[in-house]
Image 1 (cartoon, rainbow, N blue to C red):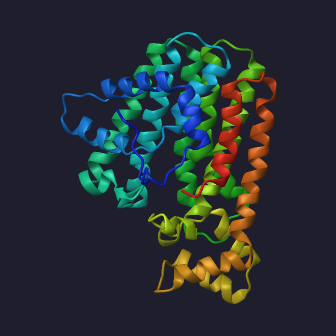
Image 2: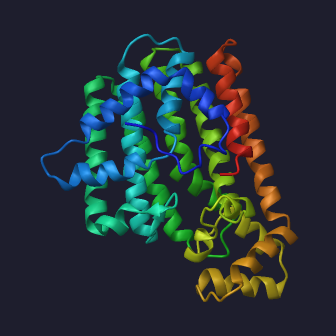
Length: 338
């Protein structure tokens, strides 16, 4: 299955993620074949819907991390490919459920699966992908792997509920926001990296180093994602801006702008984010307030902090092409503009 991107290839340059992907490209081809084979079902809508979202699934960052983690640990078997497919199935299932919960009509500029197939089908196919992921995990035959990825799945679900609790609440603290993104996003990054060491039977120190790398990379990734939702760069690239704002989703730029604002500005945030009483020009006003209070800039600085922790986590491993690529991906995740 070809990896689909929404960028014009004529203006797209090679990135550090491309370099990392090239180092695991043969394994990734096998992972894509496993994904295709294991989303098959005699129920016709399941492979149709699953194929729709997986084909538009971006750059396969999480399974690439699993493959790279196994490579940095010197693994020579094949089970890491199955685990990478498992990670992609878990990720895809969460996307399907997310879009239903958020009532999203678009994903990466394309119609979301729930917009095309309906909410019920999206939820049920998401359940199928979760179940298939666990079937594949059992096939690997490692209780440690099963424990790590099943825990990650539970934590992701907890993160979804936490986000529901903080949604539209302008009093959300930075700590509460971080708990949401650690659970919703970073936990799967961390597990994806950790199982690469587990399948290679590496010492616990290396296993936890890769977990820490993935966790902090995932936090940085989500922080930057939340900045990009308000970014002028996104608009120039033809991507949707302000989805989080329209949904009343409380992200760190909102938390910082609200805390640093005056009474009139806080009233604006309560009207637009809590009451969802949004008018023409409100998104532009929100962006102005974020610039005024350095909310976007400081969110990126937070991402750099977590990126530095991710960088230090790889210090245990000897120099290699894959280690250098994993380090370069940290900067790519933070500095990306798409």
